[in-house]
Image (cartoon, rainbow, N blue to C red; front, top):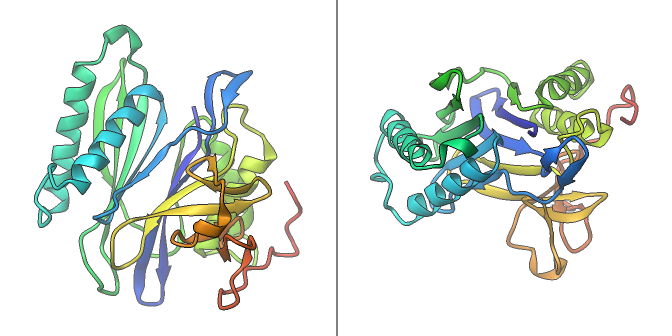
Length: 272
């Protein structure tokens, strides 16, 4: 399984950003795992991001294909509304699963986040969840976008623990901010409480204008992008980098950039 979370950043004007975060561990059982599996996907040309939990092979394959089709302009017109986009996505995922060998089908969930405005404040985000299991079949629904910064949903085998760590940060001085959500998630990963959750964090998201972003992560593991280490920090400057306190960092130094907002760890919180 995994841990997959979603949240929306909100300031005094309303929603301004939206994010998905996940771990990087792919598990065959509670004792066997690989800590470098991609679980999040971001379009390079549109404000659309995806994440999955549960089964690995089918959703990771189909979502990588979906993003390629979006970036190639083959999935839907760029002016298509959220309902049509979700309907096309669901149709494609259903068709893929119908062609997938039945004996290898396992339960999974997909989170889909998009923005339907460009450069406006507040921004309008839409977040959908698609679930499939052999016992319950398909369920697709839109999630209510909150009017304050905070965790919207936590899925996967580590979902309950992620919510507990989020509650810890929520009651701190940093509560009610995007950084509290992400830092709580990173504490959850570091704690090792869920044996099927691990490896470096992954992060994708979008602001109120422009296409989606894939964020690099600066942590005690070094520089990673979607779970894999970066071999040469000197050429990584075209990616936006965040540390586990959600500070903007320079990949060449792994330190907070000079003009970045400082996000100190609240003194009331211990280490996980």
